[in-house]
Image (cartoon, rainbow, N blue to C red; front, side, top):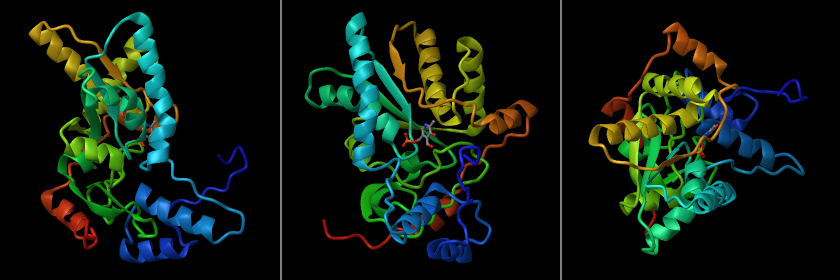
Length: 281
Ligand SMILES: Cc1ncc(COP(=O)(O)O)c(C=O)c1O
């Protein structure tokens, strides 16, 4: 980013009012997507001519990413194959939401049946351990409320988990789909995710992003299950990004210094305490 002329300020910073508020409340935090969103919104609204566009979670971002699902759907049509299981990693839910959109439409309309799996980090388990409630999308509470699976806007995900899946909330569309039982969710620890990433990199010569590697882990698990049961299944998963921006994490994994962190129930309770009073539905 600096190469291309950007100034980079780590968040939370003392350059915004909301950043200073977050730093006063969480002096030891290493930051989170929720903190960065609050600061970015403030930076945009306090400068003439600036706009802030959220890069995940909101419906229009899922809509943009539905290009992935439409292309995947067309590709399967062309080869005359139907996937049985469709898997994606979930931070805010946009790449998975986009990937599954056309397939989920078919399932909801009763035209076809698919299994959908959301793969999330055990260190930030919004689906598997979160609550389905109205909450703020950001730590500084400058964004509107959204009904979603959430760990609470004050939940501070463990800084040791690599990549961008460490968001306390989840897309409202995916939350409703999950709540209706149309999709499953699984949580994975970091080292098992990197084990899957390395297996994939060696087999495919593609270095996957840590985020995408959660989906790879889920896909490998499903494939290994098929091996055990002798069933044949077609598995589609989203390879959402490259790992070349995360070589540090690969170094940690290869050095054996990578660690796992699963929040305790007490950690989660601290986060849930930030969920605001619920509006009348
Ligand atoms: C490569 C990659 N995949 C997935 C995600 C998660 O975002 P989302 O769940 O919105 O697709 C991120 C977020 O930073 C990412 O960088």
